[in-house]
Length: 609
Image (cartoon, rainbow, N blue to C red):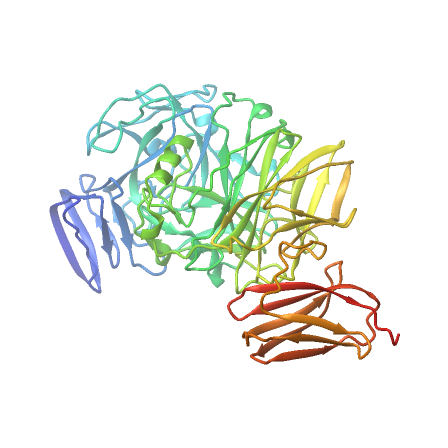
């Protein structure tokens, strides 16, 4: 096995060093180091940090990638040092997943992690180990860095609040297991050469130095049917979440990730006063930018059940690439395990659009404001974002996506259930497969009707609004249909406002793209002459301009399709039988090959009937 011996290599923003030849390892002897800044190092096989003075520093989006297949083979008593920033508020959680483990032995195995491996950076390479507070101390401190072990929990295959297991300062967090940790108070003005100081205070972030043996290779996480597990990115590089969730080998999970978000303005350690929730990420496809819908914030009772409601975070955060240290939940679709692999690792900077660690809202806003989405090759998804405000108190967002490969059923990695089996007091969702989904994907067809489910408590007020149209035809009509009175409400014009008595409404509301009762403004008669010969029971569509016709369909006023004919091409006229149709007003819809549509009303009386 050929090894590359390194004495000291400085990797700066102007110099990229890669190791990518076949059958190569990286070996660092005593008193040597690698420093990677703003670039990545790729090692085909394993790394041996031979002595305790063999160090590998990752700075300013520096990352380490490896090509090992199967079990990780990194060994030695040296450490990788990588920075990540969490919330600077000692009342708020981050969900973490460590990129390193302890170095208690030199053997080639991924080792457990504990928060005693966290450090306070003092220079670009030096650090001081964090102090562990007593278990009855709840408030972390920034300088000198003091962590409250009380808030270190992991969550293993559970469907309710009982799944939280307190870890404290123990080094028992296995590779690939996520954990919670609250932030710190105060400030730390130490400048270690990063974009900002260790902790500027206010709406800033707290910097931690993870030091230990770098995780590598296959990392297996157990899951169980309909139960959640806290996992995340266990590597010192970005993780392609789409590749992880959509891998057929990981079919034991639903293909959806859940991210904790918390109201940073709620300063309390009491569970009943928490305001937080889970944002939901659907990867859609390997090349997709994915879909993320932000959390609906709620307050919680001491048993973990929802108490009351708060405001939505409202941020559509990029989630395709999990940054170093990011933790998230997955839900099991069967009993078994899922595996994180080196093949999912990519060099993707956290400063780029689709990779943000969940911390302060201001930090995320700065990243989004400074991002140039056009420079990224990830394919955006066509979608509608629908916001519903309940009793003017809190807002929930659901997303309807238009995905060519989607079916009308449940598609793994596209359709996403809400994050909890605990229902909100008032709720809205896509009613799919007799369950409550916050993201639904369909293959767009103007004739489709998408059921919305609503749960109301004590005559709640619902305000349903179209909050965003992304990568979708801006001219397409979008309606909310209310079966109670047979009315269609133009969501592009204004929000739909209704007060509902207590109950579950799974068959009353629909999203539609046609309004059969509409008069005038979507009926165009420039290209076609349409008439009904009632005596011969024949509908004729005359095409004097010889337009290329994709389809002709006939609807009754409830929106039910009577017939649909496709691939009609260019003809002077088209004829369709209306034999046996009851006397009524109908809509004729014509789609051209360029997807323009024309709609006209006709009256069928069929005098021979």
